[in-house]
Image (cartoon, rainbow, N blue to C red):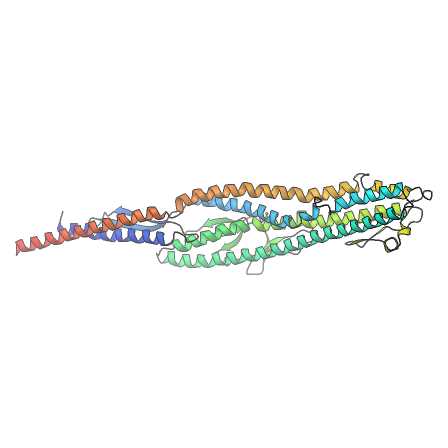
Length: 443
């Protein structure tokens, strides 16, 4: 081996271990940086020129399979969280446990009518029945308003979530441009790729996405049935449409291109946005339509029974709000307790009491069906959040075990690189001594 070859080995060792120390220091400095992926340098034997070692990298440690699984899990988790968030707004509206719900007031009204049927000439029982009727209408109006407010708030959140998706898509497109530029210039883009991949992961919570890596370092992001949210031309936008008419209140989510072209997604949007949209149109707006129908049914049934024998209407309903008819609310004597029966029979009050739990379906059955249509999706959403949260946590742990920075391991690598750097320095010193000795002998 010549002295020049010894020099080559020493110099390449200095360069390689300097790079190893630098990458270890960078990893340590970014250990707590969100989205940062541990980077490594690869040492390779030099085959051309002077002997020694070459350094390849830096290379980011990634596991595309686990990352894909995590994004998919985030999408399902986001969907259930969106459903849970939305439906929690109306959970109390259909809950009779506090004693003030519409179902509870139906039962209370039935009890008051039964007492009136047993003692139809009692002023006390008549006043109690009217007071119970007013509580029933108040409970109906409160329940309907809560359902309406909850559905409107959910729709507004869906629009806001779509705006967040569009902002993130713009950021991903901007990072794509920077990454392309660096990759095209043979420069490392690992940090930007880490930031971009973290954004894609967060985007996956908002909508179901498919990220496809490109040779230039960028990624295309697809939603729905292969609609490009981000591609080589930049980012498109998701738009949440205006709700359709009752009873479906259908909400379309479309993809808007820069050209103004509007494309149907062709598949569920998924993620948190999908959960919000489905909660709105399948449960909450539908519940508003159901309670409106129930309000009309209650009004018609009681007015028919109360009107027997010329009693007139008991309730008024304008399609959104229920109240006790003014001629009864302001004059208890106009409450028709006898119906078409004999005076003092209480037949009218008895007939009205039977309306609540007879028929197919009965009024109480219709209310309970409405509550099931709201409460069952809440339970499903809660179960889904629990299951997907556990799965996401497991996947994150697996992914972090491969990609996250261990400060202890990096400190060891830094110490080893520094020691090797010192050893390479000694090789160069020995080469210099040999060179000086040879020159002295020759001279």
